[in-house]
Image (cartoon, helix red, strand yellow):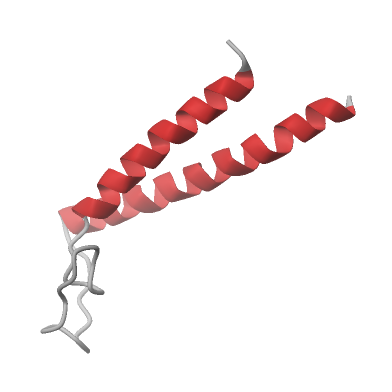
Length: 82
């Protein structure tokens, strides 16, 4: 199996997981995906419990997605140099 195919496949899997994690976030923080948050304008809430865990996992998967995208961009160019 080619390494570039593995990177592309893993990026697809990470992106699907990232979409699911974003949709599971509480929409009342900043308006969210499906709207809402109008009654809480100006009120700041700290994340607690499961919401904090989802936020942390979302950040990790976002960084992983960006790293895979950069890897997919840089590695073919490095292979052509050598």
